[in-house]
Image (cartoon, rainbow, N blue to C red; front, side):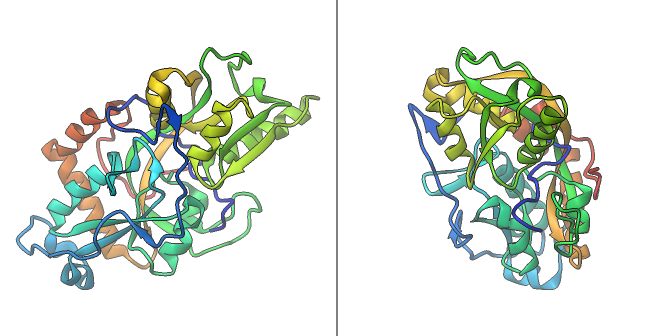
Length: 319
């Protein structure tokens, strides 16, 4: 799919403040995502054939002991770098899945808009990056043009979230809803559902006789947050857990706040190539196992995002 494919279509991440270090503290740290060559961990792994679900994996992955995960590791608390290691909700869930499957999940850092291309080219086995499960992504459709742009992917759904509006602390521009963004500058990460929501809202603005939204898009979310912090934009649209996390932690809660209600809640999915059905089914079995044994709930409690919990791992449950 192309870079215009939204990160979360009809789906956003629950935003609950998480504990831990953030890429934005005191002064907002802008972290570029690189070109998918930077790693969040070692590529080496050791397969544990005695793990409960090891037999479900494809033979090549079981032999290597590694599942390569494409991810935009600049999206706390879902995934971010700390002390040279990928940490957050997704890495913790991946570790729990690895125990069930007897392999190591290795996160590879890349720009979000390029993750599906990397998956289709074989650079990674899966994607875990707060990616919304959508029909467009399942079918390889460019959401902007409506045309076929790739093979499409399958998803193993593991979390539910929506989009939130993040503004400067004190809300100096009086933003309360999407309608208040008409004629104003909004900064956000390109290739995300947030971008799609903003584009749709901009068309609504003009059809209502108002000015369009002036969109500024960036490769990473921290870049968009920096523009908001500087007052160069009036808002950033973001997944709920991320917006709430930034509101709580950036400059000890002095930079941002969340306004309005969540928009278009839907599932995050672990993306897998269409031809990797055995891996997809193994991941689904492992997700259901950690949901059943309570490990999944413990991870969500750790990051204070239990509102986004699912009770079973569905395949392609997005709309």
